Length: 115
Image (cartoon, rainbow, N blue to C red):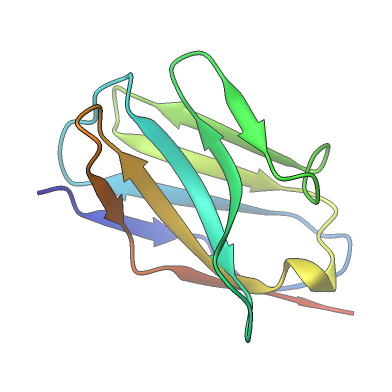
């Protein structure tokens, strides 16, 4: 069982930056997919970014503004968010998909961007 704990959310103004962190409670294989999803009020959860051992994928809405990274030695994944917009307001969730296909989720961290 893997537990994920997100941190780094908060209230910022348009154009500011935040870095989200996700700590995994146990070893994450480097070939596991780690990602960030978000869910805005009244909307479905959507993929923001994900990272494998060699690739990074981003939602079109965050390309060029957000950057995902991971530290396998520390079992951490990060999301650097620049040039934040009000439409980025959401609860952000950390996700790990193991090579066996098991999904783990954190409880989320709230990001609020004021205009």
